[in-house]
Image (cartoon, rainbow, N blue to C red; front, side, top):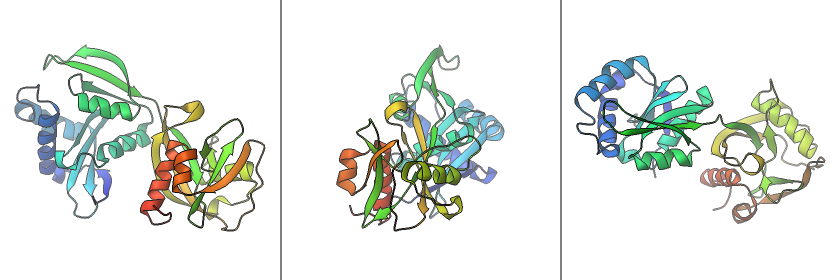
Length: 281
């Protein structure tokens, strides 16, 4: 099982590890560029981008190995690189969502012939805006944009290993209790208000504890938009919901029921709870 990773600011002492992973990653991604990962392109990374950009690294939480690099130029992802041996572990997506947490809407450029990168960014909700020819290589670069994530909150209430879920009127899909922020609200305040409106539950924001954040694609009215959902535990275990006018029904679902009846982001929550031992696999 892969070790978890943390995202932290780049430090000058990271340079050797970063230069090594960058060189190996770009040679794999850009075999169509002669001398990629060496020479002038390596000098530019070392002397310009690692100095001027807002750089972050993904680090193995257990042994401190640097596995990924994110370089930001404002809201533009100037570079995103993951060590080849660490690809497929979600590190690239983790770094993209870190960029979104800092800047909201994002933009970047990818080479047309880097089909793996284009597919990766498409899965994360990026769409093509424009194309141009890169003067240094003669290759086509595609400008990609992604809107700011829809920020929401959800409540994790388990009963006998089953997760509380709600369905709004006119909708066949179940979601976590919760919803979007109102202006000026913290995440916990937004959830306390939503629980009152949806289920008639009076749970102070101070009683709610952040558990984890889920990054997914929104479903329903906002289908296709990136979703940033902060999930909370807390509040009483014994509850008697009194659904508000928007809620058609509520239920506690196990894994299989969640897969059949709930939104995709809901299943990410279920998978996280299974991994933590709170629900049965």
